[in-house]
Length: 109
Image (cartoon, rainbow, N blue to C red; front, side):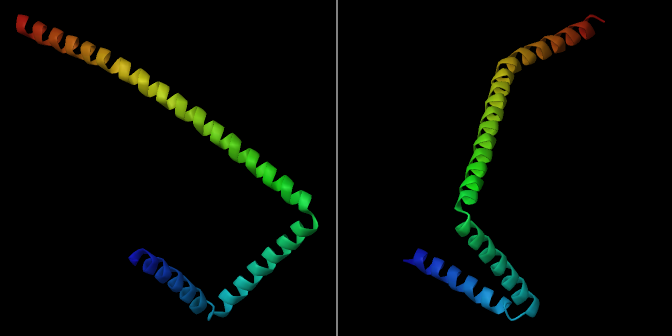
């Protein structure tokens, strides 16, 4: 119940904020320009639906290639992390051996 009150409050607050912001003349002008541009684009795509289809296909292709690229990068990073996991114990062993060698050499002096 409280969740629905929360979202109602958010929506009412957003609407109230939008209405109050329209008291400013420059804001009203900007909103009118944006609405006119949007209406123009909608009208254009209604008259030329094939362009809308091509735009959606192009956007989908870009999104798909981006997702594939991210997937490849994640795989590369996962491989490097696995290599680090394998190498880390070896590096620790080398460091410990080096430390022991220095400690032994200091003890011989």
